[in-house]
Image (cartoon, rainbow, N blue to C red; front, side, top):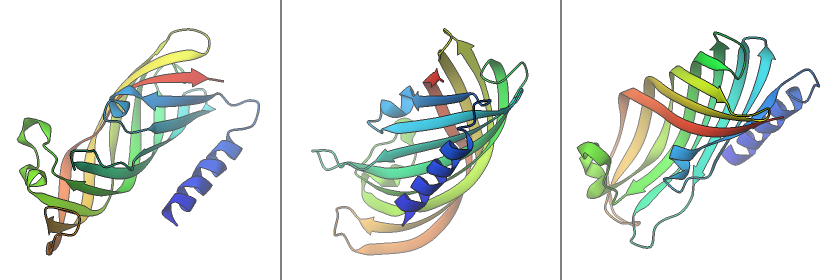
Length: 189
């Protein structure tokens, strides 16, 4: 059902962006690819200084060592450009939602220590603000750097480590902090 909804949203956005007066770009976040997570973004100009973007990432695999960082995320975003669409500095507002199933995973900087010894699964929803810059590399290619901060409501179940471990807790948490980091290559049609 959720994959179907994501497909309908993406098809609707692509249909809206198909008018000849629109600039449309396909992009991928290289930082996200470094985690072995395939991802794709579609961004469209809806005015001289305005764009909308829809980003999707999916990591369905479990590693051979038993570690799991399975998740999917859908992130729509509105952007305001200080110069013109797809050129220079921009600020934006994004929403996000997705699901996760994580176990035996050691996060950098000691974040979320419980992931090393327990399995967590659940969903999240939230939003935040984005700041970024795009460099024009050629007529059709751009490179983008962006960061975002915001809030996520996270509903989860905590289990003993392993796929079939006993459920220890159902809870939720409120997260404030970084919500996105991107170094993206994009092709503009």
